[in-house]
Amino acid sequence: MDKLTNIKVFSETAKFKSLARAAEKLNLSASSVSKHISALENHLGVRLMNRTTRKVSITDIGAAYLEKANKIIQDIEDAESMINASQKSPRGLLRIAAPSLFGSRHIAPHLPIFLDRHKNLNIELITYDDQIDIIKDSIDIAIILTKLDDSSLIAKKIAPGNRTIVASPKYINKYGEPKNPDDLSNHKLVTYLGRSQYNDWHFKVNGKSKVLHAQGSLSLSNGELILRAVLNNGGITMLSRHITGKQIREGNLKLLLEDFVEEVNPIYAVYPSNKLVQPKIKLFINYLIELYSPKPYWMVGNNVNIEARKRALI
Image (cartoon, rainbow, N blue to C red; front, side, top):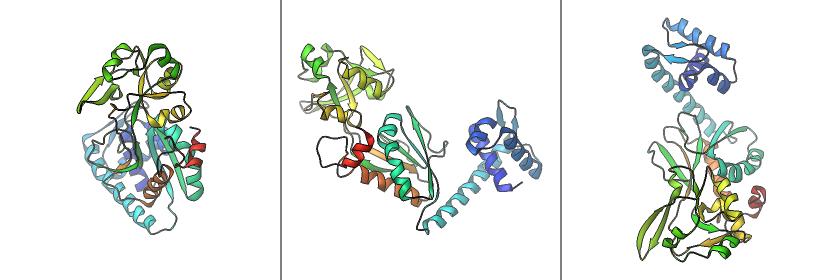
């Protein structure tokens, strides 16, 4: 068997700690994965990992070998990236991760156009609701909607982002409109489940920053559910404009407390800093910037990418 393939199979199995998950990722059978690892162990004369059909554990010598093996794999990928950089047409697999709602509304609808432009590329889109490990999950580009804390990643702003306070006109007609953030204590709030960072609502009152740790009479697990509840007069919420844009434009939601809300959250594309900036990454980031310029199509106004808005159905 090819030694490099054996090394890659070993690396993926160690990453997932599962023969089955590594097999799925590599499009192999579990038995084939086991044979690749056995061939590598026979070549080296040591046992790299203990494995059963359900569980994999790496040995001490296996862990030491894995560190060197991953460096070899990375060096080969960098070399391939260097070759690709000299090609007019990028090729290979581009793995993209995005928050579920943003991915379904603002990434997936635009992928066919991108692939039509770059016919030698394949794309995998992975969506997530909480967090994702870009390195561990072998992601080329991830879309993030919150502050970047990981210094091992490089961030490129692709669009402005902000959150706004909204409610349905029927709710406001029935319960009245809050005039300042303190008035929210007299209203039904719709929030995210648990201790979500999105339940921290930021305001500026009399020149001073203020944070409301919103507690909802109704709590839901994602922005789509919150949107549907609020549209049906469930209360007041704070949601990203890329979720509420269409409903605000069409008058189904009313903006509230605009003079107080202090929520600016740019949208970024991030990628690992330990990788060469591959042409496929550059091309896709530039494509996203093109889609969301001169201002995001989910905002009010006509100075937006109308065709992208139509594709996104928002």
